[in-house]
Length: 361
Image 1 (tube, rainbow, N blue to C red):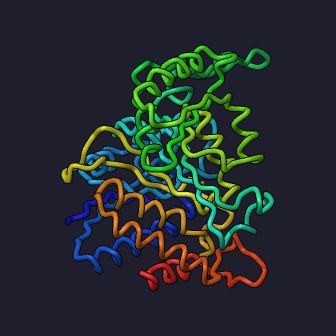
Image 2 (cartoon, one colour):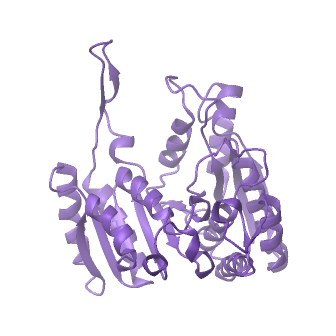
């Protein structure tokens, strides 16, 4: 199979971790007889500085022509927070343009990293869940949005808006995922105070009726945040709207020890030329400007995102399994990047961790 991948390295540590993901893809492709065609493009601060646009036309064209998109991270201190053109606008525009409405964020606690979490081992041991976040609606896209007035009468507004179809399609993804796992879906909303939350709950109940083999429950988003640190093993699939999904998945990262361990896949209904979903794959961590250029960023979230890419956008299950096993093998061998360091472990840099994963393929 030819794997045509649009590579958007992004800002700060983005290029460092993406480079290791690309190496892993090339290594597993060579082993299994696939060919890899990479199209690189700009997204993030670099795109704005060079073109003045958050999502340059060249980037958009290459993303649309690809089978899948691999992204590092965007944003950082070089950007002006008051600027009209911001890196996040490019990312949001890419998600919206590619119609990627479902963000799949697995949270798996590896036995080797039990002590890396700030929570007690008996709380995090065995955690294996997915936070399913709606990606193209809610407060991040609602209109009106903006600021008005001058000091001392400044004001700002963000509108949270959802349609029935936006909720229904996301919930169906959640139930389909659950059928292949532990068959439980928890829908997190704020139906006690938000009209959109009441809509989410109503439609979620309708979709749940289509899946009688899957256990379903409602949970308020703030209560879900509490349960994530009290008893996270109760969850299998947490399905929720855009803003809550963003917050809950970052919280859940600490179950695994670091955001440097968590991959993600963003998919929709659009198929690539191989008949699989054309997705956007990225680690959930940010651009980490404080460690950029030091060669210490953890590439495992990016490498695991590449495994998700092979599984979801190319149907290459064996190759994806091999990458995930190689990551676990490197951790079991005592290798750690600085964000998950532990006593007695061998701390390695970005490239060295990439080497370790490739060696185990």
